[in-house]
Amino acid sequence: MRFFGPTFLLSTLLLATSVLQPTLVGSGSSYCDKKCSYRCALAGVSDRCLKYCGICCMECKCVPSGTFGNKHECPCYRDKKSSKGHPKCP
Image (cartoon, rainbow, N blue to C red; front, side):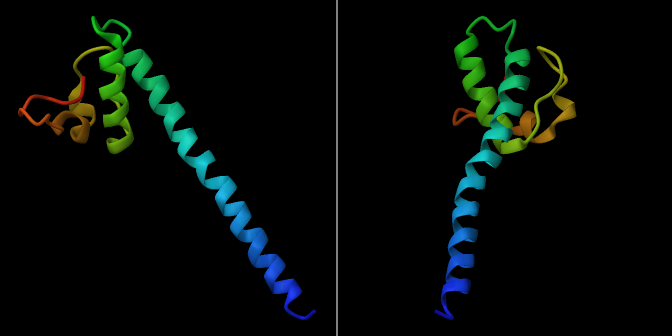
């Protein structure tokens, strides 16, 4: 009976951690979704723009303002390259 308290506390802590972790990831994703939706609003191929913008946003934690340019605001986003050496982020 004396192990019940610590075992219950540990179980509760593990359960809370497993529930909270996806929430934290989701909140970052909504930030990227919002920023990339604006960034790709005028793109000719919007689905591809959204895909790569989302990848870059998740890795760099930022998206330049506006629908084009301004990449100096986010050096990580600016410096990402594709396997062919072209800019990866729209």
